[in-house]
Amino acid sequence: MKKTGLLFTSILVLAFAITAFAQEEEADWRNFEFTAHSGITLPTGSLKTWNDSLGAKTGLNFGGSGGLYFNEKFCLGAYFNYTQSPMNLYNLHYKQYDMGAYAKYAFVGESNFEPYVKLSAGLDFAKFATWVDPANNRLREVSYDGGLAFGAYAGFLFYTSDYGGIFAEAGYHLANLKDNPGEHAGKEYYFKDNLKYLDIKVGVMVFFGPEK
Image 1 (cartoon, rainbow, N blue to C red):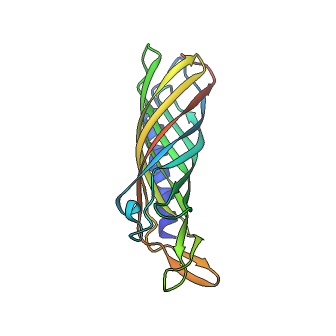
Image 2: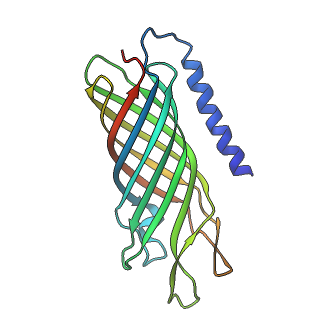
Image 3: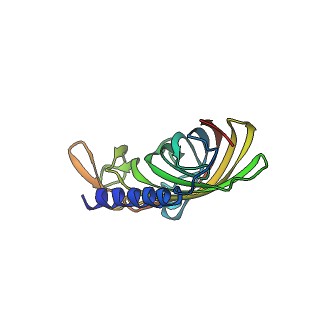
């Protein structure tokens, strides 16, 4: 309950911050944005050496998002991201499902090149290969309870039309999953550590509504 309360508090803080900025009226502004992306995920910290021999290698990600613009610069939205990373020594993968809210600030100018920064807060659910016997002879995929996740990103959009274009972004993701429980064959397991990784994403962004 404490984690859920903290998540909603974080989302409300983002919403109020954007609403405060949005009081400045704009003559022309875009209403909505929708994105679809794919990319690579670079594990850092304990994820690279998970349980000594079970470290993760560079993985793939894909997902999408949708947001509402309060003016032409400030956007609040929701996102979903799926990550799958292969293991070093076994033909198995680590899987993560991340969903939540984001706040975005776009540095709007006159060119087709538009940089932006973005913060996200949500829930991360992990499905990880886990040793399920004392002798470490059997690996099974175990789904663990979700934990709070936070991200910070920087990117840019290159307009290919008045209604959208191609974007690229990179960022850092932290998922607070340490000691979260999971169950397999009636036995409870606990997640080893928090997860940290770098995301690089490329995709398409489409706007709906008047564009300046």
